[in-house]
Structures are given as structure tokens and as C-alpha cells.
Length: 94
Image (tube, rainbow, N blue to C red; front, side, top):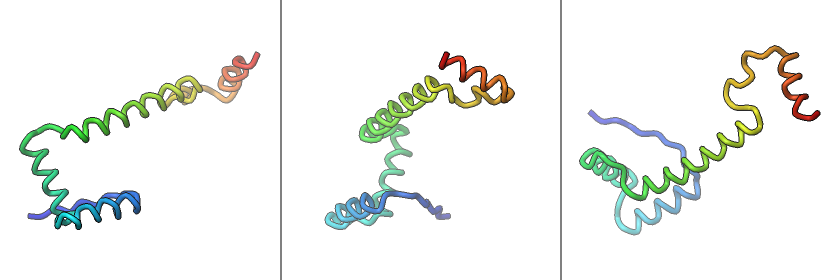
């Protein structure tokens, strides 16, 4: 049984990556299959993917910290009435 992957990727990035694969005689499907085979056999992320995720994780942590500082963290004000929310935010400017 075959499965299908559908992903969204920047057009320019796709074209550049496709060119490298074409230059080496490899189809996009073969490259993805090879990655999945590597993941399945090693049961670990390849180093290039670990590095990419660490960079992404750092951005995610920074974004979460900024949201928290701004007071708009997820669920922070969800239980407040309009008046309570107004008082909370107005107290920051007094």
C-alpha cells in the first residue's frame, strides 16, 4: 500500500532543491523516500534536521517570551471580564 505526502514549501526553495536533485539524477520522491528510510532505520533525526529544529526552537522560545512580556500569553486573559482586563492593562500605564 502506498501513502502520499502533501507539503507546502516556498516556491523558490522548491525550485532550487529540485535543480540540485535533477543535477544528481534523483527525483524528489526518491529523495523523500531516502530520508524516510533513514529515519525508520536509525530511529533518530539526522544532524542537519536536529540543527534546524534547534534554531526553530530558539525562535519559538523567544516568541513565547515576548508574548508573555506583552501579557498576551495563551489563555492569560480568557477568564477576565472586560472591566478586569481594562484595569489590568491600565495599571501598566499609571
